[in-house]
Length: 115
Length: 332
Image 1 (tube, rainbow over the protein chains, first blue to last red):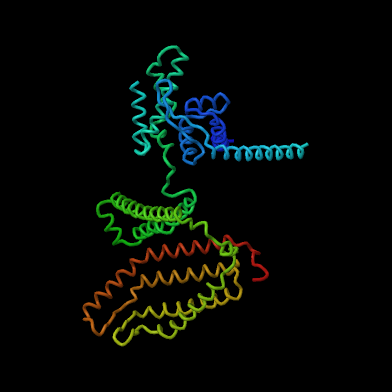
Image 2 (image 1 turned 30 degrees about the horizontal axis):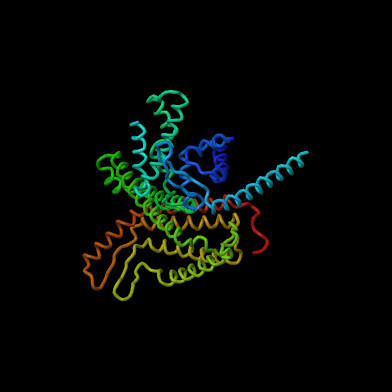
């Protein structure tokens, strides 16, 4: 298989998951850099070129709220999940679990079939 | 750190002015936080090459800024396949014939060839390439502009979403001859045949009371040849109407009839058939000029006729090749 094809599929799969991870991580207020570090610590590396446009998009959609504040003598923009965002996160998590469950069932069927 | 500021300035250049300060401030906070983290881990200031490596890892300023811009495209992914298809049609039906006609004129028309190659063959090809480029540029530009407008209309009104499955075209049978086209062909051929038989059987004929046309004696050969051909075409159209499916035999007959028509037409162009035109209200010198012009231009159209004849023959050959020996369905 072409490695580029795998990479494209992997990125496509990750894209939706990253939204979920960002929303989940922002149940606690954070600014961009610490959010990146938090996600990386949990095995979800995300570059700043993807994260900041995503944060802006989610904020425009009303899922996040942000404010500029000074911390360690530097102005930083802190993001927090909005009440609307919390609702959407719950719905997305339900969807996520449902998809996970469905895929597991499909995989189980396949392995039973082979056996 | 000057290098970081230069980087941020370069990113800012590409951002929309309304948001640029906000975005750059956020990027700066991230960049400086990462820098301080690295310096804290190393226990020293970063060197210039290390800072350069960090910036390189983030990407070109233009690309970084581009991620913050709304996704825009002149022609979106929905219309793009149609756009590409139309470009192919334009290339096949407009640009390729354009080149073929030029080749035909160069091959068969000495006057045109002499005019084109008066400097050199190289200049002639260069001139053709220049004209082709301009023609292609205008054609592609026009198609692109039209599709860009359609894209904008689609973005506003979503007219592509409004469609009715029942209006989809019926299933195509490549071997079927549409009855509608056979009916039209039959009517046109018979009308033409009757008109030809009753009005064209003379080397002198008139249009109204004031225009008189004289043709050379060779006309009678052309008349009778076309008489037979027109009758055959009309009979063929009737057969197609009754049994509306292509068979190898019928496709071969179609090819032969078309080839005969093309040969006759090519012969007519070269035959210097027009002897004179007389128009009651126009002086004879002027009608002679018109006669000369027609007799000059008809042979010049010969390469175009050859190209068209070859194209039609090609289509006919394709039809014959595509047909399998036992493809005629039992019922219509």
